[in-house]
Image (cartoon, rainbow, N blue to C red; front, top):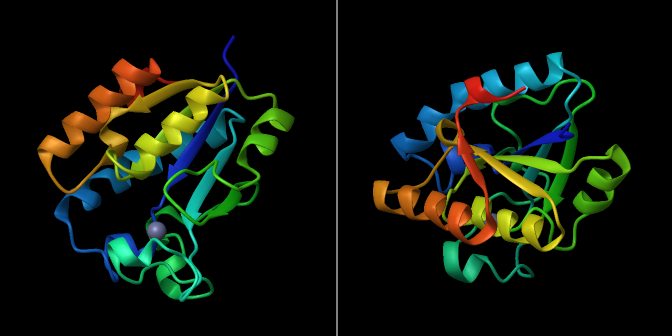
Length: 178
Ligand code: ZN
């Protein structure tokens, strides 16, 4: 039997309504992610938030995106609609992948997880890079299609196709899980 963990990538204020926010496409994934997290918690499946948490003047990513999700600010906090619950885990990250220079792999190994359910923003950037690092480390990858998106339909389809074709990810729906 698969041992799952749900990973919620970058559902922080700055991506939804703050510095880099405003895309109607991110609004549409909030409810499906909430439903999935509730289902996961009810089934004893860990919910892990991987949140951008940047240091100004240091993190190179600002050259590409401009300032966002600055450590200690409202912009770096998970949105109210998806507020972490007791027992959830928060992993701050400095760049696209939730694994890169973070304790995520250790946490997953200690929990005995073999399959990561990757959700959040953006399908063709942080979710895709997180999938790459999950694949390199031998985790199975599942992406419920209504729990991720990006700025354009083309980017969304391309992101999911890439995760499926290159990392062997399973694309499914929230209703198919647990
Ligand atoms: Zn960032």
